[in-house]
Image (tube, rainbow, N blue to C red; front, top):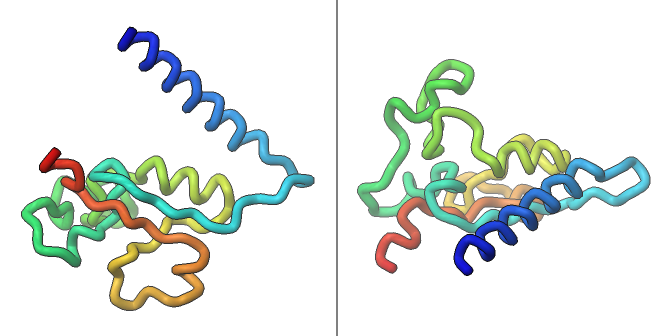
Length: 121
């Protein structure tokens, strides 16, 4: 039963990704991206809250240009970065907690993700 559910979820995700790449010139592209999640989607919100879970130090970001820490819990781009750039919304969604977040950025999409958000479950 559990393996059937997992297989169904994987198939649905693959179909959604295929559909994302089928977006043609005659179809309207999405204009906003809102990201919720944990460390797999956190692009740095944890740097603005009190937590021990931060990614602003090596080895995080080692595959980014300049090889500097990017505050992402990854050594390169996250899945959401690829989705945002593929849909041509933006290269990367800005942080909701970013102090200099503009109204335009808020309307075109932000990430609310925070590492450890499900840690207490």
